[in-house]
Image (tube, rainbow, N blue to C red):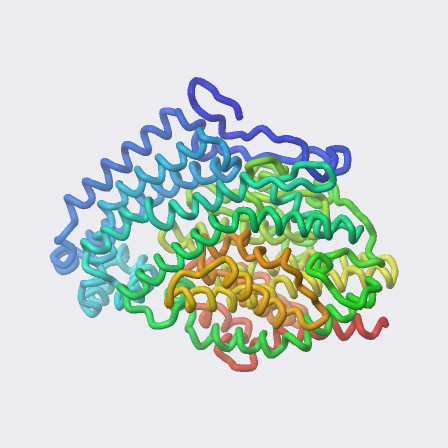
Length: 614
Protein backbone atom coordinates (compact mmCIF):
# COMPACT_ATOMS: atom_id res chain seq x y z
CA UNK A 1 0.00 0.00 0.00
CA UNK A 2 1.42 3.38 -0.99
CA UNK A 3 1.22 6.44 1.20
CA UNK A 4 1.59 9.98 -0.06
CA UNK A 5 1.70 12.86 2.40
CA UNK A 6 -0.20 10.83 4.95
CA UNK A 7 -2.95 9.73 2.57
CA UNK A 8 -3.55 6.32 1.06
CA UNK A 9 -3.20 6.22 -2.70
CA UNK A 10 -6.43 5.39 -4.53
CA UNK A 11 -4.53 2.80 -6.56
CA UNK A 12 -3.78 -0.52 -4.89
CA UNK A 13 -0.48 -2.23 -5.52
CA UNK A 14 -1.08 -5.67 -7.08
CA UNK A 15 0.72 -8.89 -6.33
CA UNK A 16 0.98 -11.64 -8.92
CA UNK A 17 -1.99 -13.97 -9.05
CA UNK A 18 -1.58 -16.86 -6.65
CA UNK A 19 -2.82 -19.39 -9.20
CA UNK A 20 -2.11 -17.95 -12.64
CA UNK A 21 1.17 -16.66 -14.05
CA UNK A 22 1.53 -13.11 -15.32
CA UNK A 23 2.68 -14.53 -18.67
CA UNK A 24 -0.60 -16.44 -19.05
CA UNK A 25 -2.96 -13.71 -17.90
CA UNK A 26 -1.13 -10.59 -19.03
CA UNK A 27 -1.18 -7.34 -17.08
CA UNK A 28 -4.29 -7.25 -14.94
CA UNK A 29 -5.85 -3.82 -14.37
CA UNK A 30 -6.32 -2.16 -11.02
CA UNK A 31 -9.01 0.43 -10.51
CA UNK A 32 -8.17 4.09 -10.26
CA UNK A 33 -10.35 5.59 -7.53
CA UNK A 34 -9.10 9.13 -8.18
CA UNK A 35 -12.36 9.83 -10.01
CA UNK A 36 -13.93 9.75 -6.56
CA UNK A 37 -11.13 11.40 -4.53
CA UNK A 38 -7.36 11.92 -4.99
CA UNK A 39 -6.58 10.29 -1.64
CA UNK A 40 -7.80 9.69 1.87
CA UNK A 41 -6.02 12.78 3.16
CA UNK A 42 -7.01 14.99 0.25
CA UNK A 43 -8.55 18.41 0.68
CA UNK A 44 -11.42 17.34 -1.58
CA UNK A 45 -12.38 14.45 0.70
CA UNK A 46 -12.16 16.56 3.86
CA UNK A 47 -14.19 19.34 2.24
CA UNK A 48 -16.98 16.97 1.16
CA UNK A 49 -17.11 15.33 4.57
CA UNK A 50 -17.38 18.70 6.35
CA UNK A 51 -19.93 19.94 3.86
CA UNK A 52 -22.04 16.80 4.31
CA UNK A 53 -22.31 17.42 8.06
CA UNK A 54 -23.02 21.13 7.58
CA UNK A 55 -25.59 20.73 4.79
CA UNK A 56 -27.40 17.85 6.49
CA UNK A 57 -27.76 19.82 9.74
CA UNK A 58 -28.91 22.93 7.85
CA UNK A 59 -31.43 20.86 5.87
CA UNK A 60 -32.95 19.50 9.07
CA UNK A 61 -33.10 22.98 10.58
CA UNK A 62 -34.81 24.42 7.51
CA UNK A 63 -37.33 21.68 6.77
CA UNK A 64 -38.10 19.47 9.77
CA UNK A 65 -41.74 19.81 10.81
CA UNK A 66 -42.51 22.16 7.90
CA UNK A 67 -43.18 19.83 4.96
CA UNK A 68 -46.99 19.83 5.17
CA UNK A 69 -47.02 23.62 5.18
CA UNK A 70 -44.50 23.75 2.31
CA UNK A 71 -46.56 21.32 0.23
CA UNK A 72 -49.72 23.38 0.64
CA UNK A 73 -48.13 26.78 0.07
CA UNK A 74 -45.39 26.00 -2.43
CA UNK A 75 -45.22 22.47 -3.91
CA UNK A 76 -42.42 23.69 -6.19
CA UNK A 77 -40.47 24.43 -3.02
CA UNK A 78 -41.02 20.86 -1.81
CA UNK A 79 -39.69 19.62 -5.14
CA UNK A 80 -36.62 21.81 -4.62
CA UNK A 81 -36.22 20.39 -1.10
CA UNK A 82 -36.19 16.84 -2.47
CA UNK A 83 -33.59 17.89 -5.05
CA UNK A 84 -31.42 19.35 -2.27
CA UNK A 85 -31.86 16.16 -0.22
CA UNK A 86 -30.81 14.14 -3.27
CA UNK A 87 -27.71 16.28 -3.69
CA UNK A 88 -26.65 15.76 -0.07
CA UNK A 89 -27.32 12.02 -0.31
CA UNK A 90 -25.24 11.78 -3.48
CA UNK A 91 -22.27 13.51 -1.86
CA UNK A 92 -22.44 11.19 1.15
CA UNK A 93 -22.76 8.21 -1.22
CA UNK A 94 -19.61 9.35 -3.00
CA UNK A 95 -17.71 9.42 0.29
CA UNK A 96 -18.85 5.94 1.33
CA UNK A 97 -18.24 4.50 -2.14
CA UNK A 98 -14.64 5.68 -1.96
CA UNK A 99 -14.09 4.36 1.55
CA UNK A 100 -15.84 1.08 0.78
CA UNK A 101 -13.94 0.41 -2.44
CA UNK A 102 -10.58 1.14 -0.81
CA UNK A 103 -11.53 -1.26 1.99
CA UNK A 104 -12.66 -3.95 -0.47
CA UNK A 105 -9.25 -3.73 -2.13
CA UNK A 106 -7.56 -4.83 1.09
CA UNK A 107 -9.79 -5.60 4.07
CA UNK A 108 -6.82 -6.66 6.19
CA UNK A 109 -5.00 -3.32 6.03
CA UNK A 110 -5.46 -1.60 9.44
CA UNK A 111 -5.22 1.91 7.97
CA UNK A 112 -7.89 1.18 5.38
CA UNK A 113 -10.11 -0.51 7.95
CA UNK A 114 -9.87 2.53 10.21
CA UNK A 115 -10.52 4.91 7.34
CA UNK A 116 -13.60 2.94 6.32
CA UNK A 117 -14.86 2.67 9.89
CA UNK A 118 -14.36 6.38 10.59
CA UNK A 119 -16.09 7.35 7.35
CA UNK A 120 -19.00 5.04 8.15
CA UNK A 121 -19.43 6.61 11.60
CA UNK A 122 -19.27 10.17 10.30
CA UNK A 123 -21.70 9.57 7.46
CA UNK A 124 -24.08 7.80 9.83
CA UNK A 125 -23.93 10.85 12.09
CA UNK A 126 -24.57 13.22 9.19
CA UNK A 127 -27.37 11.00 7.92
CA UNK A 128 -29.11 11.25 11.28
CA UNK A 129 -30.07 14.82 10.32
CA UNK A 130 -31.75 13.57 7.13
CA UNK A 131 -33.66 10.66 8.59
CA UNK A 132 -36.71 12.79 9.38
CA UNK A 133 -37.29 13.65 5.73
CA UNK A 134 -38.61 10.34 4.40
CA UNK A 135 -40.57 9.72 7.62
CA UNK A 136 -42.25 13.11 7.46
CA UNK A 137 -42.95 12.82 3.73
CA UNK A 138 -44.79 9.58 4.42
CA UNK A 139 -47.02 11.35 6.95
CA UNK A 140 -48.21 13.82 4.31
CA UNK A 141 -51.70 13.31 2.92
CA UNK A 142 -51.50 11.31 -0.34
CA UNK A 143 -54.21 13.41 -2.03
CA UNK A 144 -52.40 16.60 -1.06
CA UNK A 145 -49.21 15.25 -2.68
CA UNK A 146 -51.15 14.40 -5.84
CA UNK A 147 -52.57 17.93 -6.00
CA UNK A 148 -49.08 19.33 -5.42
CA UNK A 149 -47.70 17.31 -8.32
CA UNK A 150 -50.36 18.75 -10.60
CA UNK A 151 -49.12 22.23 -9.69
CA UNK A 152 -45.38 21.54 -9.68
CA UNK A 153 -43.20 19.90 -12.38
CA UNK A 154 -40.30 19.79 -9.88
CA UNK A 155 -42.35 17.73 -7.42
CA UNK A 156 -43.86 15.59 -10.19
CA UNK A 157 -40.34 14.62 -11.30
CA UNK A 158 -39.94 12.68 -8.05
CA UNK A 159 -43.26 10.83 -8.24
CA UNK A 160 -41.63 7.37 -8.70
CA UNK A 161 -39.45 7.95 -5.64
CA UNK A 162 -42.35 9.24 -3.54
CA UNK A 163 -44.53 6.30 -4.60
CA UNK A 164 -41.69 3.92 -3.75
CA UNK A 165 -41.19 5.62 -0.39
CA UNK A 166 -44.90 5.23 0.34
CA UNK A 167 -44.57 1.45 0.24
CA UNK A 168 -42.43 1.61 3.40
CA UNK A 169 -45.06 3.52 5.36
CA UNK A 170 -46.79 0.51 6.99
CA UNK A 171 -43.45 -0.56 8.50
CA UNK A 172 -42.32 2.90 9.57
CA UNK A 173 -41.65 3.48 13.28
CA UNK A 174 -41.77 6.56 15.48
CA UNK A 175 -39.03 9.03 14.55
CA UNK A 176 -36.82 8.58 17.61
CA UNK A 177 -36.89 4.80 17.29
CA UNK A 178 -35.92 5.10 13.63
CA UNK A 179 -33.09 7.40 14.68
CA UNK A 180 -31.92 4.86 17.26
CA UNK A 181 -31.96 2.06 14.68
CA UNK A 182 -30.00 4.28 12.30
CA UNK A 183 -27.31 5.36 14.75
CA UNK A 184 -26.83 1.91 16.28
CA UNK A 185 -26.33 0.32 12.86
CA UNK A 186 -22.63 1.18 13.08
CA UNK A 187 -22.24 -0.91 16.24
CA UNK A 188 -24.87 -3.44 15.15
CA UNK A 189 -25.17 -5.26 11.83
CA UNK A 190 -22.55 -3.11 10.08
CA UNK A 191 -19.94 -4.06 12.69
CA UNK A 192 -20.75 -7.76 12.36
CA UNK A 193 -20.54 -7.46 8.56
CA UNK A 194 -17.09 -5.95 8.91
CA UNK A 195 -15.98 -8.67 11.35
CA UNK A 196 -17.05 -11.30 8.81
CA UNK A 197 -15.20 -9.59 5.96
CA UNK A 198 -11.97 -9.15 7.88
CA UNK A 199 -12.08 -12.66 9.31
CA UNK A 200 -12.70 -14.19 5.89
CA UNK A 201 -9.96 -12.12 4.25
CA UNK A 202 -7.53 -13.17 6.98
CA UNK A 203 -8.04 -16.92 6.51
CA UNK A 204 -5.14 -18.91 5.10
CA UNK A 205 -5.29 -22.38 3.55
CA UNK A 206 -2.28 -24.69 3.22
CA UNK A 207 -2.76 -26.61 -0.02
CA UNK A 208 -0.10 -28.31 -2.09
CA UNK A 209 2.63 -26.77 0.01
CA UNK A 210 1.36 -23.24 -0.59
CA UNK A 211 -0.41 -20.79 1.72
CA UNK A 212 -3.46 -19.42 -0.10
CA UNK A 213 -6.23 -16.93 0.59
CA UNK A 214 -9.87 -17.93 0.18
CA UNK A 215 -10.31 -17.04 -3.49
CA UNK A 216 -7.44 -19.11 -4.97
CA UNK A 217 -8.25 -21.91 -2.51
CA UNK A 218 -11.83 -22.10 -3.79
CA UNK A 219 -10.48 -21.90 -7.33
CA UNK A 220 -8.72 -25.23 -6.80
CA UNK A 221 -12.14 -26.90 -6.53
CA UNK A 222 -12.17 -26.54 -10.33
CA UNK A 223 -8.80 -28.26 -10.79
CA UNK A 224 -8.66 -31.10 -13.30
CA UNK A 225 -6.94 -33.46 -10.83
CA UNK A 226 -9.38 -35.03 -8.39
CA UNK A 227 -6.73 -35.41 -5.68
CA UNK A 228 -6.02 -31.65 -5.84
CA UNK A 229 -9.74 -30.85 -5.55
CA UNK A 230 -10.11 -33.21 -2.60
CA UNK A 231 -7.10 -31.77 -0.78
CA UNK A 232 -8.39 -28.24 -1.32
CA UNK A 233 -11.94 -29.15 -0.27
CA UNK A 234 -10.81 -30.81 2.94
CA UNK A 235 -8.47 -27.95 3.83
CA UNK A 236 -11.18 -25.37 3.18
CA UNK A 237 -13.54 -27.37 5.40
CA UNK A 238 -10.87 -27.68 8.11
CA UNK A 239 -10.16 -23.95 8.21
CA UNK A 240 -13.85 -23.00 8.14
CA UNK A 241 -14.52 -25.46 10.96
CA UNK A 242 -11.61 -24.08 12.99
CA UNK A 243 -13.21 -20.63 12.72
CA UNK A 244 -16.72 -21.97 13.22
CA UNK A 245 -17.30 -20.30 16.57
CA UNK A 246 -16.81 -16.86 15.07
CA UNK A 247 -18.98 -17.51 12.00
CA UNK A 248 -21.69 -19.15 14.11
CA UNK A 249 -21.76 -16.19 16.49
CA UNK A 250 -21.96 -13.73 13.59
CA UNK A 251 -24.82 -15.70 12.00
CA UNK A 252 -26.75 -16.02 15.28
CA UNK A 253 -26.33 -12.34 16.09
CA UNK A 254 -27.37 -11.05 12.67
CA UNK A 255 -30.36 -13.40 12.48
CA UNK A 256 -31.52 -12.17 15.89
CA UNK A 257 -30.87 -8.56 14.91
CA UNK A 258 -33.06 -9.03 11.85
CA UNK A 259 -35.78 -10.73 13.88
CA UNK A 260 -35.89 -7.77 16.28
CA UNK A 261 -36.13 -5.25 13.44
CA UNK A 262 -38.79 -7.31 11.63
CA UNK A 263 -40.85 -7.68 14.81
CA UNK A 264 -40.76 -3.98 15.60
CA UNK A 265 -41.68 -3.06 12.03
CA UNK A 266 -44.46 -5.63 11.77
CA UNK A 267 -43.21 -7.83 8.95
CA UNK A 268 -45.08 -11.13 8.77
CA UNK A 269 -42.72 -13.50 6.99
CA UNK A 270 -38.98 -13.67 7.66
CA UNK A 271 -38.22 -12.64 4.05
CA UNK A 272 -40.88 -9.92 3.70
CA UNK A 273 -38.43 -7.09 4.33
CA UNK A 274 -36.31 -8.33 1.41
CA UNK A 275 -39.39 -8.65 -0.81
CA UNK A 276 -40.32 -5.07 0.07
CA UNK A 277 -36.81 -3.84 -0.73
CA UNK A 278 -36.99 -5.72 -4.04
CA UNK A 279 -40.46 -4.34 -4.74
CA UNK A 280 -41.68 -7.83 -5.53
CA UNK A 281 -44.69 -9.65 -4.13
CA UNK A 282 -44.18 -12.59 -1.78
CA UNK A 283 -46.45 -14.72 -3.97
CA UNK A 284 -44.19 -14.16 -6.99
CA UNK A 285 -41.10 -15.30 -5.06
CA UNK A 286 -42.96 -18.29 -3.59
CA UNK A 287 -44.00 -19.32 -7.11
CA UNK A 288 -40.37 -19.05 -8.27
CA UNK A 289 -39.09 -21.14 -5.35
CA UNK A 290 -41.78 -23.76 -5.82
CA UNK A 291 -41.10 -24.05 -9.56
CA UNK A 292 -37.34 -24.45 -9.04
CA UNK A 293 -37.72 -27.00 -6.24
CA UNK A 294 -40.10 -29.05 -8.37
CA UNK A 295 -37.52 -28.93 -11.15
CA UNK A 296 -34.61 -30.22 -9.02
CA UNK A 297 -35.02 -33.84 -10.31
CA UNK A 298 -35.37 -32.72 -13.94
CA UNK A 299 -32.41 -30.34 -13.85
CA UNK A 300 -29.68 -30.74 -11.24
CA UNK A 301 -30.29 -34.40 -10.31
CA UNK A 302 -30.38 -35.42 -13.97
CA UNK A 303 -27.37 -33.36 -14.97
CA UNK A 304 -25.09 -34.52 -12.16
CA UNK A 305 -25.89 -38.18 -12.91
CA UNK A 306 -24.59 -37.52 -16.42
CA UNK A 307 -21.56 -35.70 -15.08
CA UNK A 308 -20.68 -38.63 -12.81
CA UNK A 309 -20.61 -40.89 -15.88
CA UNK A 310 -18.39 -38.42 -17.75
CA UNK A 311 -16.01 -38.31 -14.79
CA UNK A 312 -16.04 -42.11 -14.52
CA UNK A 313 -17.22 -42.21 -10.90
CA UNK A 314 -20.18 -43.90 -9.23
CA UNK A 315 -20.73 -41.25 -6.57
CA UNK A 316 -20.01 -37.51 -6.57
CA UNK A 317 -18.30 -35.77 -3.68
CA UNK A 318 -18.77 -32.05 -3.11
CA UNK A 319 -15.35 -31.40 -4.61
CA UNK A 320 -16.56 -32.94 -7.89
CA UNK A 321 -19.45 -30.51 -8.38
CA UNK A 322 -17.42 -27.89 -10.28
CA UNK A 323 -14.82 -30.29 -11.67
CA UNK A 324 -13.87 -29.62 -15.29
CA UNK A 325 -15.26 -32.16 -17.73
CA UNK A 326 -12.93 -34.62 -19.48
CA UNK A 327 -13.87 -33.25 -22.91
CA UNK A 328 -13.25 -29.61 -21.92
CA UNK A 329 -10.03 -27.95 -23.02
CA UNK A 330 -7.66 -26.65 -20.38
CA UNK A 331 -7.81 -23.16 -21.83
CA UNK A 332 -6.56 -20.16 -19.89
CA UNK A 333 -7.99 -16.86 -21.12
CA UNK A 334 -5.59 -13.95 -20.94
CA UNK A 335 -7.07 -10.68 -19.78
CA UNK A 336 -6.94 -9.33 -23.32
CA UNK A 337 -8.78 -12.40 -24.64
CA UNK A 338 -11.43 -11.99 -21.96
CA UNK A 339 -11.83 -8.31 -22.83
CA UNK A 340 -12.19 -9.03 -26.55
CA UNK A 341 -14.61 -11.91 -25.93
CA UNK A 342 -17.00 -9.88 -23.80
CA UNK A 343 -16.87 -6.69 -25.84
CA UNK A 344 -17.39 -8.57 -29.10
CA UNK A 345 -20.46 -10.33 -27.67
CA UNK A 346 -21.83 -7.05 -26.36
CA UNK A 347 -21.08 -5.27 -29.63
CA UNK A 348 -22.88 -7.88 -31.72
CA UNK A 349 -25.99 -7.17 -29.65
CA UNK A 350 -25.63 -3.39 -29.62
CA UNK A 351 -22.53 -1.29 -30.39
CA UNK A 352 -23.50 1.21 -27.69
CA UNK A 353 -23.45 -1.58 -25.11
CA UNK A 354 -19.87 -2.47 -26.06
CA UNK A 355 -18.92 1.21 -25.99
CA UNK A 356 -20.14 1.61 -22.40
CA UNK A 357 -18.50 -1.64 -21.28
CA UNK A 358 -15.29 -0.60 -23.05
CA UNK A 359 -14.99 2.43 -20.78
CA UNK A 360 -14.41 0.12 -17.82
CA UNK A 361 -11.28 -1.25 -19.51
CA UNK A 362 -10.06 2.02 -20.99
CA UNK A 363 -10.47 4.15 -17.87
CA UNK A 364 -9.35 1.74 -15.14
CA UNK A 365 -12.77 1.11 -13.63
CA UNK A 366 -11.91 -2.57 -13.01
CA UNK A 367 -9.79 -4.18 -10.29
CA UNK A 368 -8.85 -7.68 -11.51
CA UNK A 369 -5.81 -9.23 -9.72
CA UNK A 370 -6.07 -11.76 -6.91
CA UNK A 371 -4.13 -10.58 -3.86
CA UNK A 372 -4.10 -11.21 -0.11
CA UNK A 373 -6.71 -9.19 1.76
CA UNK A 374 -8.82 -8.38 -1.28
CA UNK A 375 -12.53 -9.12 -1.02
CA UNK A 376 -13.31 -12.52 -2.56
CA UNK A 377 -15.81 -13.00 -5.35
CA UNK A 378 -16.89 -10.18 -7.63
CA UNK A 379 -19.18 -7.16 -7.65
CA UNK A 380 -20.13 -4.04 -9.58
CA UNK A 381 -20.57 -1.00 -7.36
CA UNK A 382 -22.58 1.89 -8.86
CA UNK A 383 -21.02 4.61 -6.65
CA UNK A 384 -23.11 7.70 -7.52
CA UNK A 385 -24.54 8.99 -10.83
CA UNK A 386 -22.18 11.97 -11.01
CA UNK A 387 -19.17 9.58 -11.16
CA UNK A 388 -19.43 6.01 -12.57
CA UNK A 389 -19.50 2.37 -11.41
CA UNK A 390 -16.48 0.25 -10.52
CA UNK A 391 -16.09 -3.50 -11.00
CA UNK A 392 -14.13 -5.90 -8.77
CA UNK A 393 -13.23 -9.40 -9.96
CA UNK A 394 -10.63 -11.94 -8.90
CA UNK A 395 -9.46 -12.92 -12.35
CA UNK A 396 -7.57 -16.21 -12.80
CA UNK A 397 -8.15 -16.97 -16.45
CA UNK A 398 -10.73 -19.74 -16.26
CA UNK A 399 -13.78 -19.79 -18.55
CA UNK A 400 -15.95 -19.08 -15.49
CA UNK A 401 -13.87 -15.96 -14.85
CA UNK A 402 -14.73 -14.72 -18.33
CA UNK A 403 -18.42 -15.28 -17.60
CA UNK A 404 -18.04 -13.49 -14.26
CA UNK A 405 -16.49 -10.54 -16.07
CA UNK A 406 -19.40 -10.52 -18.54
CA UNK A 407 -21.83 -10.69 -15.60
CA UNK A 408 -20.33 -7.79 -13.67
CA UNK A 409 -19.95 -5.63 -16.78
CA UNK A 410 -23.65 -6.24 -17.43
CA UNK A 411 -24.28 -4.71 -14.02
CA UNK A 412 -21.91 -1.88 -14.89
CA UNK A 413 -23.67 -1.03 -18.15
CA UNK A 414 -27.01 -1.14 -16.33
CA UNK A 415 -25.73 1.18 -13.60
CA UNK A 416 -24.36 3.68 -16.13
CA UNK A 417 -27.68 3.81 -17.99
CA UNK A 418 -29.84 3.94 -14.85
CA UNK A 419 -27.67 6.76 -13.49
CA UNK A 420 -29.65 9.12 -15.71
CA UNK A 421 -32.48 8.85 -13.15
CA UNK A 422 -30.41 10.55 -10.45
CA UNK A 423 -29.27 9.36 -7.05
CA UNK A 424 -32.74 8.73 -5.61
CA UNK A 425 -34.23 6.80 -8.54
CA UNK A 426 -31.29 5.02 -10.18
CA UNK A 427 -31.18 2.04 -7.83
CA UNK A 428 -32.85 -0.97 -9.46
CA UNK A 429 -34.59 -3.55 -7.22
CA UNK A 430 -32.46 -6.68 -6.92
CA UNK A 431 -34.91 -8.84 -8.84
CA UNK A 432 -34.34 -6.77 -11.98
CA UNK A 433 -30.80 -5.70 -11.10
CA UNK A 434 -29.64 -9.20 -12.10
CA UNK A 435 -31.32 -8.98 -15.52
CA UNK A 436 -28.55 -7.09 -17.31
CA UNK A 437 -25.79 -9.14 -15.69
CA UNK A 438 -27.28 -12.51 -16.59
CA UNK A 439 -28.21 -11.23 -20.07
CA UNK A 440 -24.57 -10.19 -20.53
CA UNK A 441 -23.48 -13.71 -19.61
CA UNK A 442 -25.97 -15.19 -22.09
CA UNK A 443 -24.71 -12.96 -24.90
CA UNK A 444 -21.13 -14.00 -24.17
CA UNK A 445 -21.99 -17.69 -23.97
CA UNK A 446 -23.94 -17.64 -27.23
CA UNK A 447 -21.09 -15.81 -28.94
CA UNK A 448 -18.58 -18.44 -27.81
CA UNK A 449 -20.94 -21.30 -28.68
CA UNK A 450 -21.34 -20.01 -32.23
CA UNK A 451 -17.55 -20.23 -32.63
CA UNK A 452 -17.28 -23.80 -31.29
CA UNK A 453 -14.96 -25.64 -33.67
CA UNK A 454 -16.18 -29.23 -33.21
CA UNK A 455 -18.92 -31.27 -31.47
CA UNK A 456 -16.75 -32.06 -28.44
CA UNK A 457 -16.04 -28.38 -27.85
CA UNK A 458 -19.73 -27.54 -28.24
CA UNK A 459 -20.68 -30.28 -25.77
CA UNK A 460 -18.17 -28.98 -23.23
CA UNK A 461 -19.51 -25.45 -23.58
CA UNK A 462 -23.13 -26.58 -23.23
CA UNK A 463 -22.23 -28.53 -20.10
CA UNK A 464 -20.42 -25.54 -18.64
CA UNK A 465 -23.43 -23.31 -19.32
CA UNK A 466 -25.77 -25.82 -17.68
CA UNK A 467 -23.52 -25.86 -14.62
CA UNK A 468 -23.50 -22.07 -14.50
CA UNK A 469 -27.29 -22.04 -14.73
CA UNK A 470 -27.57 -24.65 -11.99
CA UNK A 471 -25.27 -22.55 -9.82
CA UNK A 472 -27.39 -19.49 -10.55
CA UNK A 473 -30.84 -21.05 -10.18
CA UNK A 474 -30.76 -24.34 -8.24
CA UNK A 475 -27.92 -23.44 -5.91
CA UNK A 476 -29.30 -19.99 -5.10
CA UNK A 477 -32.76 -21.34 -4.32
CA UNK A 478 -31.09 -23.95 -2.11
CA UNK A 479 -29.31 -21.04 -0.40
CA UNK A 480 -32.67 -19.32 0.05
CA UNK A 481 -34.11 -22.49 1.61
CA UNK A 482 -31.12 -22.70 3.95
CA UNK A 483 -31.56 -19.09 5.02
CA UNK A 484 -35.25 -19.63 5.69
CA UNK A 485 -34.47 -22.60 7.91
CA UNK A 486 -31.78 -20.68 9.78
CA UNK A 487 -33.91 -17.60 10.45
CA UNK A 488 -36.96 -19.62 11.40
CA UNK A 489 -34.97 -21.83 13.77
CA UNK A 490 -33.15 -18.84 15.27
CA UNK A 491 -36.48 -17.53 16.56
CA UNK A 492 -36.52 -20.50 18.92
CA UNK A 493 -33.04 -19.83 20.30
CA UNK A 494 -29.36 -19.80 19.39
CA UNK A 495 -28.12 -22.29 16.82
CA UNK A 496 -24.98 -24.38 17.17
CA UNK A 497 -22.47 -24.95 14.39
CA UNK A 498 -23.70 -28.55 14.24
CA UNK A 499 -27.30 -27.46 13.69
CA UNK A 500 -26.28 -25.06 10.96
CA UNK A 501 -24.19 -27.76 9.32
CA UNK A 502 -27.09 -30.21 9.39
CA UNK A 503 -29.44 -27.70 7.74
CA UNK A 504 -26.79 -27.02 5.10
CA UNK A 505 -26.35 -30.70 4.26
CA UNK A 506 -30.10 -31.29 4.09
CA UNK A 507 -30.71 -28.58 1.48
CA UNK A 508 -27.67 -29.69 -0.52
CA UNK A 509 -28.98 -33.26 -0.66
CA UNK A 510 -32.40 -32.09 -1.80
CA UNK A 511 -31.07 -29.75 -4.47
CA UNK A 512 -28.20 -31.82 -5.88
CA UNK A 513 -29.62 -35.35 -5.65
CA UNK A 514 -28.58 -38.76 -4.37
CA UNK A 515 -25.62 -39.02 -6.73
CA UNK A 516 -23.78 -36.88 -4.15
CA UNK A 517 -22.23 -38.09 -0.92
CA UNK A 518 -21.41 -35.37 1.59
CA UNK A 519 -18.76 -35.95 4.24
CA UNK A 520 -18.09 -33.85 7.32
CA UNK A 521 -15.62 -31.58 5.51
CA UNK A 522 -18.57 -29.92 3.76
CA UNK A 523 -20.64 -29.13 6.85
CA UNK A 524 -19.14 -25.68 7.43
CA UNK A 525 -19.24 -24.42 3.84
CA UNK A 526 -22.31 -22.33 4.63
CA UNK A 527 -20.05 -20.01 6.58
CA UNK A 528 -18.16 -18.47 3.64
CA UNK A 529 -21.23 -17.24 1.69
CA UNK A 530 -21.14 -13.43 2.08
CA UNK A 531 -24.74 -12.87 0.95
CA UNK A 532 -26.04 -14.57 4.10
CA UNK A 533 -24.22 -11.91 6.13
CA UNK A 534 -24.54 -8.74 4.07
CA UNK A 535 -27.94 -9.17 2.40
CA UNK A 536 -30.24 -11.79 3.93
CA UNK A 537 -32.43 -13.47 1.29
CA UNK A 538 -30.68 -11.63 -1.56
CA UNK A 539 -29.90 -14.94 -3.25
CA UNK A 540 -33.26 -15.59 -4.89
CA UNK A 541 -32.64 -12.52 -7.07
CA UNK A 542 -30.09 -14.57 -9.05
CA UNK A 543 -32.64 -17.28 -9.82
CA UNK A 544 -35.22 -14.60 -10.62
CA UNK A 545 -32.79 -12.97 -13.03
CA UNK A 546 -31.69 -16.19 -14.72
CA UNK A 547 -35.21 -17.48 -15.37
CA UNK A 548 -36.27 -14.01 -16.52
CA UNK A 549 -33.32 -13.69 -18.90
CA UNK A 550 -34.00 -17.14 -20.37
CA UNK A 551 -37.46 -15.90 -21.34
CA UNK A 552 -36.15 -12.49 -22.39
CA UNK A 553 -33.47 -14.03 -24.61
CA UNK A 554 -36.09 -16.20 -26.31
CA UNK A 555 -38.03 -13.01 -27.09
CA UNK A 556 -34.82 -11.46 -28.46
CA UNK A 557 -34.17 -14.43 -30.76
CA UNK A 558 -37.67 -14.20 -32.22
CA UNK A 559 -38.01 -10.41 -32.12
CA UNK A 560 -38.22 -8.05 -35.02
CA UNK A 561 -36.18 -4.85 -35.05
CA UNK A 562 -36.52 -2.75 -31.94
CA UNK A 563 -35.70 -5.24 -29.20
CA UNK A 564 -32.42 -3.51 -28.33
CA UNK A 565 -34.18 -0.16 -27.90
CA UNK A 566 -36.80 -1.71 -25.61
CA UNK A 567 -34.05 -3.47 -23.65
CA UNK A 568 -32.12 -0.23 -23.14
CA UNK A 569 -35.30 1.50 -21.99
CA UNK A 570 -35.69 -1.23 -19.37
CA UNK A 571 -32.15 -0.60 -18.11
CA UNK A 572 -32.49 3.18 -18.16
CA UNK A 573 -35.63 3.02 -15.99
CA UNK A 574 -33.58 2.21 -12.89
CA UNK A 575 -35.93 2.15 -9.92
CA UNK A 576 -38.71 4.21 -11.49
CA UNK A 577 -40.96 1.33 -12.57
CA UNK A 578 -42.34 -1.94 -11.16
CA UNK A 579 -41.15 -5.20 -12.74
CA UNK A 580 -44.59 -5.79 -14.27
CA UNK A 581 -44.44 -2.46 -16.11
CA UNK A 582 -40.88 -3.03 -17.31
CA UNK A 583 -41.55 -6.53 -18.64
CA UNK A 584 -44.83 -5.70 -20.37
CA UNK A 585 -43.22 -4.43 -23.63
CA UNK A 586 -41.63 -7.88 -24.01
CA UNK A 587 -44.87 -9.76 -23.41
CA UNK A 588 -43.54 -11.20 -20.13
CA UNK A 589 -45.38 -11.42 -16.82
CA UNK A 590 -43.64 -12.72 -13.69
CA UNK A 591 -46.99 -13.09 -11.92
CA UNK A 592 -48.07 -15.74 -14.46
CA UNK A 593 -47.82 -19.15 -12.69
CA UNK A 594 -46.30 -20.66 -15.82
CA UNK A 595 -43.69 -17.95 -16.29
CA UNK A 596 -40.98 -19.64 -14.24
CA UNK A 597 -41.48 -22.99 -15.95
CA UNK A 598 -40.71 -21.29 -19.27
CA UNK A 599 -37.36 -20.10 -17.96
CA UNK A 600 -36.55 -23.46 -16.42
CA UNK A 601 -37.46 -25.26 -19.63
CA UNK A 602 -34.51 -23.52 -21.32
CA UNK A 603 -32.13 -25.25 -18.88
CA UNK A 604 -33.94 -28.56 -19.41
CA UNK A 605 -33.58 -28.10 -23.16
CA UNK A 606 -29.81 -27.75 -22.87
CA UNK A 607 -29.68 -30.91 -20.75
CA UNK A 608 -31.81 -32.69 -23.36
CA UNK A 609 -29.26 -31.66 -25.99
CA UNK A 610 -26.43 -33.01 -23.85
CA UNK A 611 -28.27 -36.30 -23.29
CA UNK A 612 -28.72 -36.66 -27.03
CA UNK A 613 -24.93 -36.72 -27.45
CA UNK A 614 -24.55 -39.74 -25.16
